[in-house]
Length: 86
Image (cartoon, rainbow, N blue to C red):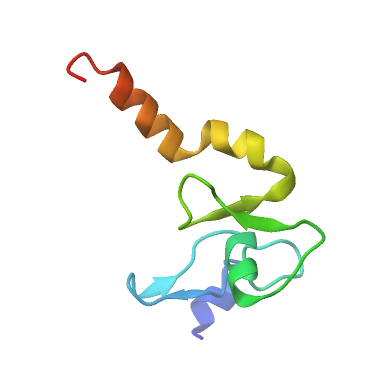
């Protein structure tokens, strides 16, 4: 781990494909953001589950309904359907 991730208050999860550390903000007192805490097996008081529309990311189980409405996949599908050439 480089000093960059530790010093700037960002998530300590290294993204090998991007060759950098995650830029998300972890919760106070944590090393990893909520997304990567789940991946690292660090459990919090709220359960995180894979997004039903796009399992490459996850969201809080108690906010699942709200997340589905604002998920990027939902926005993309809606814009495609509203396109005049669809």
